[in-house]
Image (cartoon, rainbow, N blue to C red; front, side, top):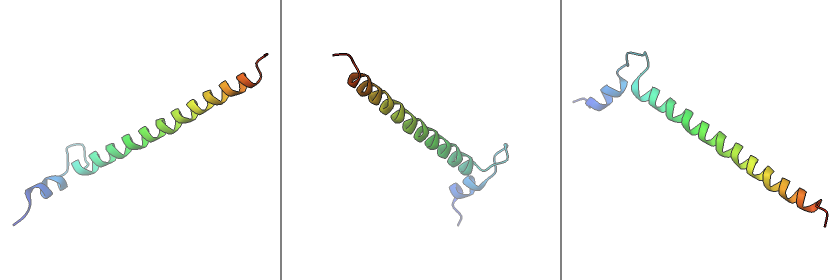
Length: 61
């Protein structure tokens, strides 16, 4: 007996790739993009906090 779900996952899509592979690639791209924005956003926030401390230290008191 064969598993029909396994056969469906290996069946090619009209766009040329298998469904499971194209979905996994799309998910990997989404995770990588999200990680990039999290790292980028964290650095921007850290730079802003650093700027606040720098300006506070050099403020005329």
